[in-house]
Image 1: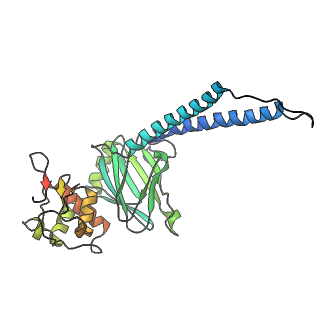
Image 2 (image 1 turned 90 degrees about the vertical axis):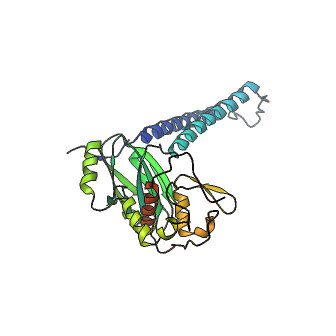
Image 3 (image 1 turned 90 degrees about the horizontal axis):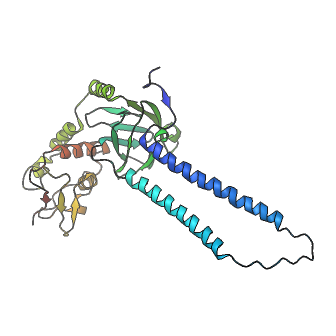
Length: 317
């Protein structure tokens, strides 16, 4: 049986090793102090037990050095645990810039995976080993949770929002994928597989699996079909060329960054963030576009050439 077809249950990503070390440290602290505290309780209960009804125990004065010791040492350990865990949390929350982005849409009760090149998967996720993978996720109905136990990662997938998580697989093989948030009667069946492949095998699989157009190409068709070009390719609406990642000035004087969240909100609820200098003619596409189509439009906007000179400010003065 090849490594790609074998099932792995243990450490399968760089995160698994890091979280595992923290877990072992926390368990070590827990076991050590549990044994110490309960051991002292039993020891003192026997040593200082009352031996007769008339016995009057001596007055025991406090010990400043002991009190300082049992205050400073636990406080120091708590600081170590906090700094260690928060450091991992912040790194986990910030995918590397060079990550390969893959999109995940959850719905009762399946996972739909969309690769930028156009490949779509159901309840499977193919990725190359040794390459940072960023998952941009949303839900079409209720709260789900994308969890890969062998990678030690999990993240809520929320309706109406984007959440992200990332990992770098460290070994090839098949890894269980679960929904870790109860999402209805079919929750237990909302499972799948992450298939980690060698880069050359992944490139071959990707090229051999493309059955349609890329997400950006489909987004360009949606751009034309829904008449976006009548405004955004003219002076009626803010231009899309160079929009993604730029700073946008709104009518209330605030500025926002044109990221995935901004674009999604602009498509579904344009009145909530009107761009300065443009009339409020943008209609809402709430109920007309699904999450997959919104991601495809976003991919198209991302693909548009950025201006050559520095940072761009969208919005008329």
